[in-house]
Amino acid sequence: MSMADLPDRVKIGDSHYTILYQLEITDEKDEKLLGQCDFQSCTIKVVPNSNTYKNTLRHELVHAISYFMNADLTEKQVDQVCNGLGTLFIDNPKLKDTIL
Image (cartoon, rainbow, N blue to C red; front, side, top):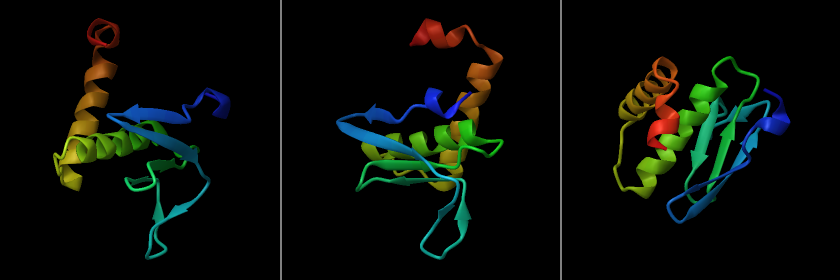
């Protein structure tokens, strides 16, 4: 998938998130990250050249959904939902078209 094919915006509830693809993302402690979701600026950042960028993007989207729904999911819960959705759609590719 080329960079031109990657989504650059997503609407979650009443928020419009901008998706930025950056070669390097760091947190406030200057530690490297694969992804980051900023609820205030409605920005999701993802390192696109990682082998797991699809999972990382899905993970950050679950964070944004959790914020919108006031679900207050922990990092572990976000990982579990993210991995569960990934497994569900990989194991059942036709399901996506059935339920969406």
